[in-house]
Length: 222
Ligand SMILES: C[S@@+](CC[C@H](N)C(=O)[O-])C[C@H]1O[C@@H](n2cnc3c(N)ncnc32)[C@H](O)[C@@H]1O
Image (cartoon, rainbow, N blue to C red; front, side, top):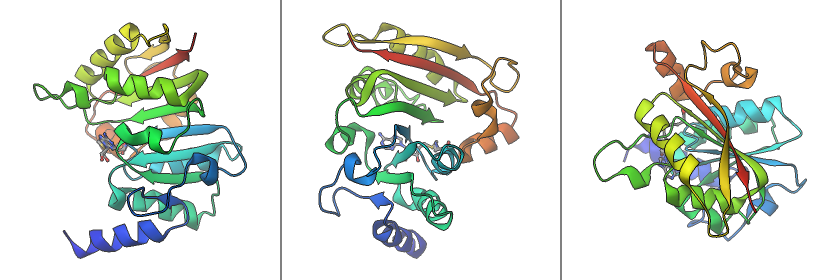
């Protein structure tokens, strides 16, 4: 591993706006968000650029970036500290283990931004919109909470539309698709937030001329 990466891991760990479960005493969302602001999570946050931009734009909300790659999220955590943002925080974790630190029904919105599409045969269950992950989101989201997905991958988008439409919880909980955009930057109905803030991967996809798709689904807990 490069020295640069090791330095970033150590700094990430020491930053006051980050949490690495296997390295630190147990803490949860309630401690990271002491003002109890409404919570939005960005999953697969990468550098956390989107989390930081949202936190700047909406100071009345709390933003949690989640990714397993600490050296990447170092960038967002450092930027949030430099900008003195007290409403952005970064959790280094597998999304599969989210519920160890995020209480049930505590999150208003989840953004999944440019997640890896995992197209190889047999790897569909790693996709962040597979049934297992939708189950996790159904437990941490509040009733009426929103799931947003932005992607440049048509196979992932098509798959996500199918799983989100068909997923049912044990008590009949489900997700209602509210908005589907097949070309975010060409569609005049695109909400401004979809074009005004871009993630690190999104910028490079746009530079390559790729089309960005978006969906929004509302969680209905019965
Ligand atoms: C293609 S990058 C996108 C990063 C960022 N959202 C962006 O748009 O710039 C996908 C990210 O998802 C993270 N990731 C994929 N599966 C994950 C999982 N199960 N748990 C945590 N992170 C995951 C990877 O570590 C990687 O940083």
